[in-house]
Amino acid sequence: MRKATPDAPDNKDVIAGCWPGHHPSTRSRLQEILSRAAYSDAPISLRDRVLVNVCEFRAKLANGDLLAYLETDTQAKLGAARFTLNEIGAMSLAARISDALAEARRSHGKARTWQAFVKLEADLAAAGRALDEAIAAYSITAGSTRDAGAVRYG
Image 1 (tube, helix red, strand yellow):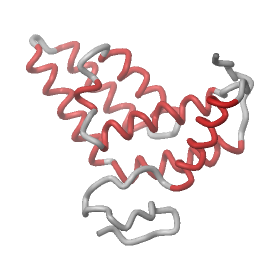
Image 2: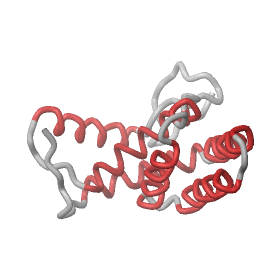
Image 3: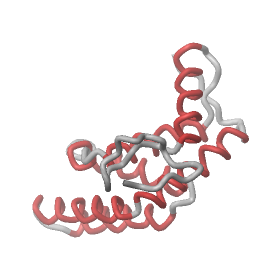
Image 4: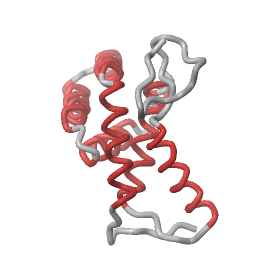
């Protein structure tokens, strides 16, 4: 079982090696963003949208749903993931997505293309803890910084 750290998730039922969810600071920020989106017509900033998108991508990766998620509209989904990873400062992970997309374009046949995405999933999963920490750091700065690129939904 993972040892507790000040910002580590506090789930005591975590099985060794399983992803316990977002850091508390990230969960708190997500809850604020989603509540604001659901219950007010306040604008959602670009930084908030980046946070929501990278968290969705991280959850799919951690839960083993990434390859199923990528079965449709793969290029657009990976392009969006690459953008959000760059925005949170995870440039090496964004570069791995670029590499996988380039390999998929060079590949002839679905099997080789899919192999590139399976390798990508393994590479991203290996960065799990570091990715969680990058997302948590971004969630803190996203909460303290507002941008002019806010968009109203609904």
